[in-house]
Amino acid sequence: MNIQVYGSASKAGVAVAQVFAAQIIRDPFSVLGLATGSTPLPTYEAMVELYKAGIVDFSTVRTFNLDEYVGISREHEQSYYSFMFEHLFSQINIDPAHVQVPNPVSENLDEDCIAYDAAIDDAGGIDLQLLGIGHNGHIAFNEPGDLFTYGTHIVELSKSTIEANKRFFASADEVPKKAMTMGIGTIMKAREIVLVASGKDKAQAVATMILGEIDPLCPASALLLHPQVTVFLDADAASLLH
Ligand code: GLP
Image (tube, rainbow, N blue to C red; front, side, top):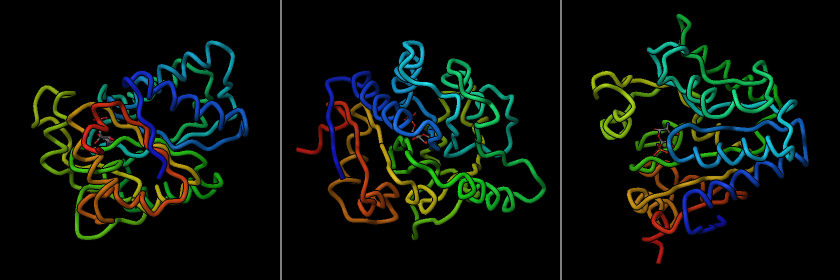
């Protein structure tokens, strides 16, 4: 695991955007795995800047998002689908037909999950996956548990995740209780992974991931087994790494 520490969250975001730019320049048909949350916002801003500067062309890129809430429509302003269009897709020249966000709406959500993994496989697998990390060490919506999860699946959100995400909703009651998420296995199949974390409130999760055991109680610790992971931190998120 390669670790890079930057003076600010925005500098880390610029560095991550440059990794994505290099990937797309190397392979314009790249398959990218994308994340939501506050942490990737500086990365998406920097990607938009690189696009506007004519450095990156997204027209042949395909993307798969990590996760989506169950029980709110795509048009809901807090859906991850809406988030991605607001913060990235509407500002770059990506073909909306090349964009996939989990869409848990059918009668049989397990079938939606199987279809999502199949679509990733059909696209040739993910070349470069972006991740954030939750306070409890979750990645995507893979919450701490007894076992690492494998494929895309439906998950009950933990109290702490609902608590952390309630800032985007009128109240905690309005936060969906379930989500559809890539599994740890889905994420680990990506050829390269970039995890970003910023702020003091992420320092403990980052330290547990990097310095602790490989343990499903810290889902992000599975990344220690991946041969190609870079963790981009600001100084606050790195503050417990000594
Ligand atoms: C959500 C998302 C994760 C994200 C995490 C942290 O639970 N499903 O993908 O990494 O929140 O979000 P933030 O970056 O806002 O702290």
